[in-house]
Image (cartoon, rainbow, N blue to C red; front, side, top):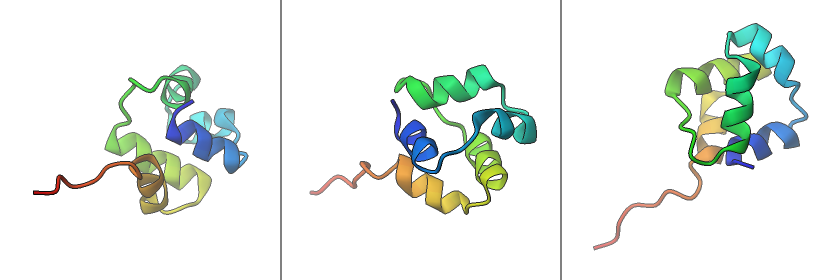
Length: 72
């Protein structure tokens, strides 16, 4: 499961509702939630945030929490 999938599960998000509200297909939401190689686009993140009534930053920080700057 991806970080987005874990986040949506923790929040008990109904993916059918998200799909209906955002226009993102249930198949695409499933791919974003389960396949680590699937890339989340900024517009998808924003629409998902609107649909579940959270700030885009909250989701962004969750899905990107492992990214770090390269130390020199």
